[in-house]
Amino acid sequence: MSPVKVFGHPMLTNVARVLLFLEEVGAEYELVPVDFVAGEHKRPQHVQLNPFAKMPGFQDGESLHIKSRAIAKYILRKYGGTAGLDLLGENSGIEELAMVDVWTEVEAQQYYPAISPVVFECIIIPFIIPGGGAAPNQTVVDESLERLRGVLGIYEARLEKSRYLAGDSISFADLNHIPFTFYFMTTPYAKVFDEYPKVKAWWEMLMARPAVQRVCKHMPTEFKLRARTRCLCTPRGCVPCRAGDDPTQEKRPPSRGWVIICPSTSSIPFQFQQHEESACASARASPDSLL
Amino acid sequence: MSPVKVFGHPMLTNVARVLLFLEEVGAEYELVPVDFVAGEHKRPQHVQLNPFAKMPGFQDGESLHIKSRAIAKYILRKYGGTAGLDLLGENSGIEELAMVDVWTEVEAQQYYPAISPVVFECIIIPFIIPGGGAAPNQTVVDESLERLRGVLGIYEARLEKSRYLAGDSISFADLNHIPFTFYFMTTPYAKVFDEYPKVKAWWEMLMARPAVQRVCKHMPTEFKLRARTRCLCTPRGCVPCRAGDDPTQEKRPPSRGWVIICPSTSSIPFQFQQHEESACASARASPDSLL
Image 1 (tube, rainbow over the protein chains, first blue to last red):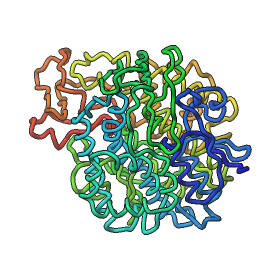
Image 2: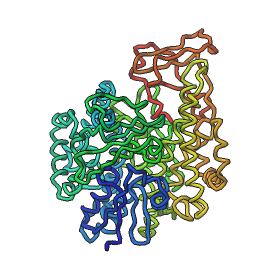
Image 3: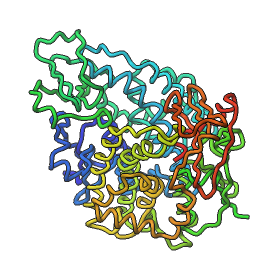
Image 4: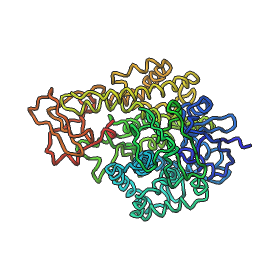
C-alpha cells in the first residue's frame, strides 16, 4: 500500500494538478474518492485532512498537506530527484529558479483570471441550467478573450526566445497550465490558440507528455445534461429536477451560485440520485471547487 | 548607486511587498517613481521592464524581474543569506519548506479573496465617488467578513500550535499578509481581529518589525477626498471634476471600473491635476493595481 494518498475526484483541476506531478515523478499513490456530491468534503473526516474543506486532501505517511500547488512542490522535492526531474529549477542558479517562480505567478495571476471566465461561461454555467438553455454571457466571454489574447501575445514573444516559459527545459510553471487549459480547449474558443503558433506548439508539447495524458483521460470533454437525475442547489434554495421532468425544458435556478454538476462522460463518473431539498445544503459544491 | 532598482509607488501593495523583503534583508535599493496617474506604467519604457505593464518593475544589475512574489523570493535567495534569514525555509527540511508553501498559498487563495472585498467596499469604492457619498455594499462586506471569520478561525487554531503560520519562526508566508491587512486595519471592521486573540497577537508581532514599519509609513491610512482636483476614469468614459465643483456633492462615475484615486495622506503623495477627458485613457489605473 502506497504511503501517498490523494483524496478527491480526478476531474477537479486542483486534484488533477496533484495527480499530474505524481505521474510526472512516477510516484506510487492511491486515489481515495471523495463524494463531493454527497458533501463528503465538508464532513469531519475530510476536514481533518483539509481544514478548508477543499479538495484534494493529501497524505504521505504521517504527514498531511493541503493546497494543490504546495502539494505539487512537495511531491517534486520529495520524489522528483529519483526521477531526475528538476521542474522547480532548484538545482539551477538563482536566475533560473527565479524564472520558474515568475512564470508560475504569471499563470496564477494573469493567465488563469483571463482564461477561466470563458470556461465558466461556456461549460459550467450553461451546464447547470437544466435543459442546457443558458447562453454564455457574450460580454464576459469577449472581454476575457481580449484579456487572454493580451496574455498569449506575451507568451508568444516569450516562447520565441525559449522552448518553454521559464527556459529551454520544461518546468513547474508550464505544467501548471494543464488543468484549466484542458477544459478551455473543449470550448468553441479553443481556436484562439491558433493565432499564436509558438503557444500552440508549446501546448501540444505539453499534451504529448505521457503523464499529462494519463491524468487528462479522467477529465471530461463533454458535459452532457442529465436533467432527470440532476438537482441544482444554490445559496437561495434548491431546484430539484423531478423524475419525469422534460429534459429539453429550461428550468432556471434562483441564482448562479452554488451548484452541483454531474459530468456524464468522466471515465470515473459521479452518478447521483434525486434527493429531497433538505438534503441539498450539505451536498452543495461550488463551480470554483469543481473545475 | 545600488544595482537594485524598484520601479513603482510604495503605496501599492505589490510594490510594498517587494520593498518589505528588501528592508527585511537589509539590501540597498533605489526606488524609482512611476507616475501611474500619468500612465507611465503603460509606456514603452516601463513595458520593457514589465511586459504586463504592471508595477513594480525590478532590476538587479543586468537582470530584470516581474511579479512581486517571485521578486520577493529572488531577493530572499540572493540577499537573505547574508542577513541570516531563511524566510523561505529552504535551509530546513522538506516538511518545513512545505509548510511555508502551504501558508503562502493559503494567503493568496483563501485569505486575500476574503479580506480584499472589504477593503474595496470600505476604502476604494467610496473614495472614487466625488463627495464621498457612496455607501459600501453591505451585502458584499457581510459575506466577505463571514468568509474572513472562517479563515481567521483556521488561523487561530493554527496559531495555537505554533508561533507563526508555518512554524515557530517567521516566514515568507506571514510577511505576505502585511500589505493588504494593513489597509484592512484602516476600515471600521479592523475589530474583527479582536475576536481571534492569537491572530491579533500574531499581527501585532508582524507590525512591530522595524522593516514592516519602514515600509508601512509610505502607505496611507486615510483616503481624504480631493474632489476639486480629481478625475474619475472608467472604461466607459471619464467623469472629470471641474474646478468649482461642490466637493460635498456626489457625482457618480458611469461604472465602478477603472479609476484613478489620489491618496491625500501618503507620505510620498501623488498630486495630480485636472486634465481633459482625452488624456484619461492613457492615465487610468485599476483598483487592483492600486492597493
